[in-house]
Length: 289
Length: 256
Picture (cartoon, rainbow over the protein chains, first blue to last red):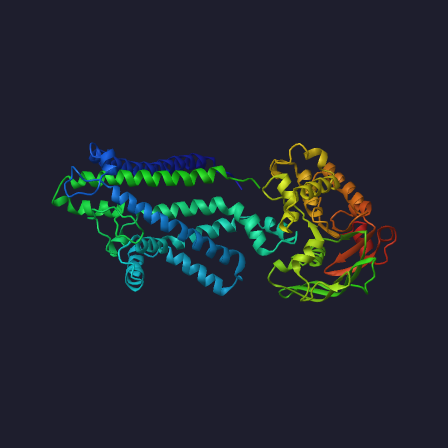
């Protein structure tokens, strides 16, 4: 075998080209993001203030506030968080720790993974027919919250499964060898180790739920609600819905674009905060086995 | 239990074990005596780890495993429907090849067993902590840092912590699956000393790759080859005067 030294030159050049291509891709994404942010921030200047955050909705742009929408989005979280955590984590525990490995388990796992990629409109339709009509929750926060829970449940299940799978087998073994039952082992050893991963996945999916518009539109959640909801069974509106309808009505009232931009900023800040919490949890709990 | 010979802890009768289609243990018959250190030696893949993991039924965590025959533990067949696996494993502790402490404090590691078995009294727990760590010859090294994470200990200390954790539930038997194979010679020597001091109170079964180790620490030695128990007897006898040609070949280093 002879090493062709001329080739080294060529490979170094190719490496250079590859680096350019990859950094260009990153720059492209950053530029698009920058443009978006610039337009939104520019549009919201002068509109996003304390009065806007605490004010009630109005058809007059100068008076309009999004307090009702903020309360609505918080109400949705109040339903989505417990429902997805309890159902999602329990399902993941069953699938990873209890169910027998086999064809049926595989089939269920594949279907859950598939559900995670079903378009959100479909979940909206399911919510409309089941929660709104059959269960008669109408366009309440309960209907919206449960629909969004269904939407992100598969994601929580899959990410919790991954977190459980990442718990080293030797820890389970150690616990079993001490005479611990399966549940004791799961509760005392597996979950404490997996909880950062579970929470990270859960927070990320809940923040996705908060940003979802389509299922809520299908459920007939209106934007024009003057009354701030006081119970979970009340009609409500939410931040993404507010953004959606204001953007639609820009044709009639140009200032609605500014209102939408200001609301987007609020939603972005909420999402940013939640994702930061997720990253914080992940970084704080990196364990070296 | 009344009928059983008190000196015999384990009486294994015609034990066969399969992983799916592959037979890993063939007709094993062996008696393990109380307060004895029994070393299990043999080349890789001979079934020695499989055998020791059968004694506390940890092997059943592998779904394809099937066994026939019986293992009498103080006269009761461990495969009996009436035998609770949790109870068996509480009486029969295990130390693994790689130290496997929980990612918790030293304190929590040692007291994991007592706590899951429902002991809440602070004084009893404190006593169990101290006795177990002292028996595992670790107390002096960790008494000032009981609330540090177990992973801050060295590998050898971690393994002694795992031994302390196993001792904390006051088992009758301790199974050790190559407990020193991941450790350096100094840490190994400490564990060997420890095993010697533990045999006054416990029955110890140890799988080892090292024949020197078997010679140093065990009273009896069992030589496994291709799933068969080739020879079993007093360690001195096995090493000085093996009855079987295959045992002789193995201990003189002709293979394995």
